[in-house]
Image (tube, rainbow, N blue to C red; front, side, top):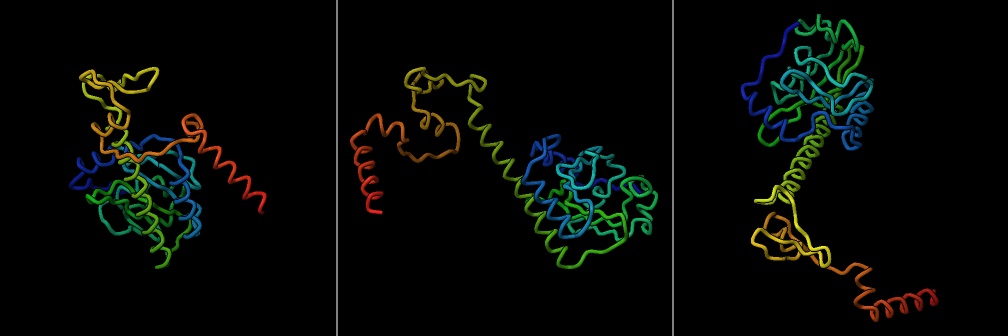
Length: 243
């Protein structure tokens, strides 16, 4: 068995992986949909979203496999992240890198492995979307095209997750008071670090890149503009009668 070399940018790659804060998280439908589609398209019993950490590969989503992770030393995906191109091993028993790998000689008895790197815009390959079969086979060009698209979609979900985390941090990290926001129990204004009371949208605009639009909720409309609500309801009744 040949253990994969470490990428030249390994420290940066691991830092990029950890920025997603995805390792160890619960299953999510968006990722599970990707592996289900991959399994169906490629007609394989196993499909995985595998993230290659320092000493393990951890599966964010998996079809047809019980294990949540394996050693990185055994990982086919650790080989796949060394190149931006897909790694397709048609028969692992015929490949000197893998024929005595415990994942080949034992469960899940890998024969076909097709791994498509998950590469972000900074060229960090953090893992793969891969499909596995217990018998030798190949993927068609159209199957490869779909897998490449699904891998890009998985990266898009990861990037969206990272942006959402950064946005939450920008909202929750308040200078000088450890993320605690002081609000008025009556008018719900927020007190800033200078002791000034501000509306929440003003307060957040000063501390994040959030922007706001304004409207009036149904409850406030009834409390402050009852005559408008009365007209609306009257017009709706007339429309219902006309129908």
